[in-house]
Structures are given as structure tokens and as C-alpha cells.
Amino acid sequence: MCGMPQQPPVRSTPKRPSRPDASMSLLTNVMDHSLDDGYAEAAARKQAQGQSGLPKTLRAKLGLAAGLVLAALVVTVGAAEARIAAPVVAKEREELIDRIDQETESADKLEDRVDSLRTDVGNMQREALKKHGGEQGELVGLLSGAVAVHGPGVRLVVDDAKSAQTGGGGGPRESAGFSDTGRVRDRDMQRVVNGLWQSGAEAVSINGQRLTALSAIRAAGDAILVDNKPLVPPYTVLAVGDGQRLSTRFQNSPDGMYLHALQENFGIRTSISAQDDIKVPAAPSVIVRTAQPRAEQKGTS
Image (cartoon, rainbow, N blue to C red; front, side, top):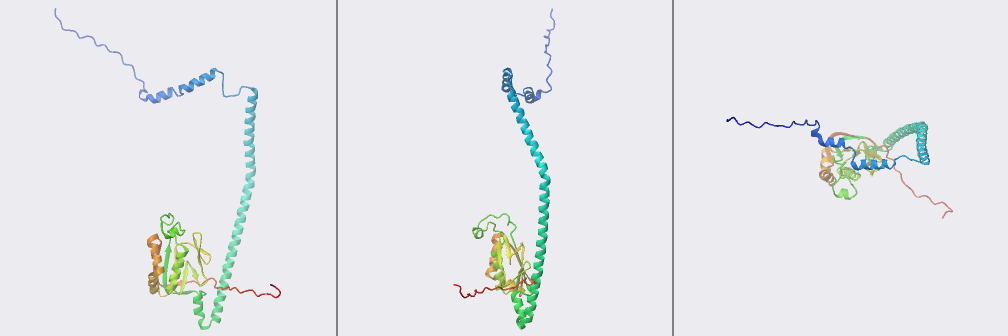
């Protein structure tokens, strides 16, 4: 009897449920074995030998206790001394601040007094010049800088380069000791002022400081001093004279070309313009001091 061939029964092994953390095998291994096997073995061997980090003998325990007490004592004494000294230091600091304020106020009063006396001396000098100068008194006052003047002239502004703080580069100014080639120096202002005088200026001032035959332009570090008074950039130079003619003659002079070279090569900023009316103040003092040889006394060799 023939029948249909029977298919063998399908046998399947039930599937084991997967662990929820199967995808994090690395983290699971780290968590299950947080201590390296070598460290665990060393700790077990040390424990089996009866060794531990704490001292066993009474002497060692007493030494440890004494060390802890000494450390605590040092910390306590230090904290107590700091607490005691804090009010004393604060008091001394307040006294020092008060003394500085008092001395600063005293110095300001003395400076105001000096300015007042300098003004009085200048007024007396101008009055004496008008009284005894005759017809030449006004001209002498103008040339000496004893009187304030105003009239047409030029306004010249000289300022440091924008990159003056970065410096760098090479050139004759740096090789002469100027590490920052973008800074305006005292010798630059000297050439500017001399060039204005040679171009026909009748009176010159820098940042409100009148220049006379007794004036000096020097440097103190990075600061420019005019008659020992520090100036800060930009440097505004006012020169009384024939405005347009003075401007043209100065720019065509060697000193004007020198200033132009500073602008082209080192980025120093300059601007010059003719003005219809410029006011130049009087000089604070035009006292001339002369030295004379000391007369020899009889009986001295």
C-alpha cells in the first residue's frame, strides 16, 4: 500500500533569552572585575600572612598617636596665631592707607601752591617787560615766550602707530635701541619742533606746553618730557605763523620729510592743517640763571 511520504518532524531547541546588557560587554566586564586579578591575589596573600597597614606593637601605636596629636597641635596653633594676627594686620593696613591719603593730599596742596606762585612770577615778569621793555617789549615778550599769542598758524598732530604695542621688525630705529618702532620718540619731536622754527614759526607749543629758548624735550623711559612735564600721545603741536606758507615750507623741509618717512616706514600717524586762529599760552617761567666764577678770598691758596 502506497501512501504519501511523511516529512520528518521538525525539532527545534528552545532559544535562550539574551541578557539585557549583552550589547555592553566591555562595561559589564569592567564592573564584574573592578579589581585586577594581580591586586586581588596580592591582597589575599597579605591577609593570609596576617599583615596590615596599621602598627601592631604598642610602641608603634603610641608613636602614630603622638604624630597625629603633634600635627593637630601645629594646625591648631597656626590657626590661632593667624586669627590673633589678622586684626593687627588689618589695623596696620588701615593706618598705612590713611597715611598715604594724607601725604597725597599734602602733595596736591603743595603742587597747587607751586602753580599759583609760578603764575604770579610769570605775571610779574610780563608786567616788568611791558614797563621796561619800551617799544621792543612786545617783541621781546613774544620771542621769549613770556606772553600768550594767537593768530594764524598750523596744527600738527603726531601719534603712535596702531601696532605700537606689538613691535617687531627691524630697521634703524630698532637697531638704535628702540624695540618698538611704532612709538614716537623724543628725538622725533625735537626734529618736528626744530623744523617748524626753521620754517618760520613764531611760537610753538606741544600739548599746551609753550616752548622757549630754555625748553628741553627729553625722554624718561617711554614717556616724552617737555620742560620735565610728561606728555601722552597724541602730541598736538601748535605753531603760530603764516598758516599755509608755514605748512608748505615745513612739509618740504628735511624735518618734514623725516616725519613723512616715519609715517611710511613705521606707521606713525600724522596730520597737518593750516588754521585761521591758533592760541599758544605763555610759558610758566622764563627765568635765566647764569653761573659766575667765585671770587678768590685773600689768604687762601
